[in-house]
Image 1 (tube, one colour):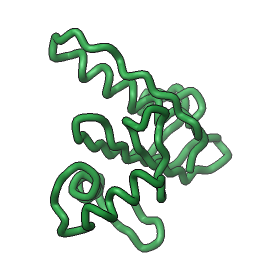
Image 2 (cartoon, rainbow, N blue to C red; image 1 turned 30 degrees about the vertical axis):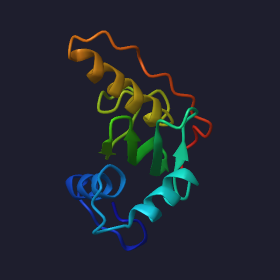
Image 3 (cartoon, rainbow, N blue to C red; image 1 turned 90 degrees about the horizontal axis):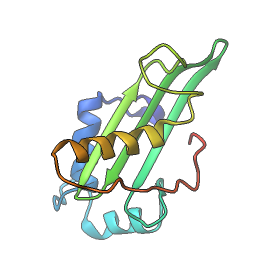
Image 4 (cartoon, one colour; image 1 turned 90 degrees about the vertical axis):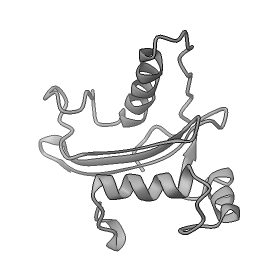
Amino acid sequence: MGAYGWYLTPREAGQLYARVLSSDDESVLPTAYKDTLLLNGLGNFKAAGGTVAYHDGWWYTTNPSYVGLRTIWMKLPDNITVVLFVNTIQAGNGWLPSKNGLDIVPFMVNTYNAARSLSGARVAAMAVDIPHPEPH
């Protein structure tokens, strides 16, 4: 990730976002600021119901379309934070199942739902209404 002077590997980004968003650790950000960040949607978007907060990014070329970097962090229920960096988003190449490069948020939610069902438990899929599906 290289936006605005931040250079992190996916692992480093995952550690940072998990510490800030899904733990009681205040070494990076005090809890009051975490609450302000998530509850007021500062730099992130909330799915309907408030169970998911996320921010995604996209740097791409237009020819061929949708080739480029796609990133997302997502805070999910049960204090799970997921970070995904994809450096190729061409539709149909198999790297990221995508119709047009716009569907990384639903991809993450579907993956979360699939992982929840793997435990053998009867768990209903989490329904998520994304009010801002466009890349940010």
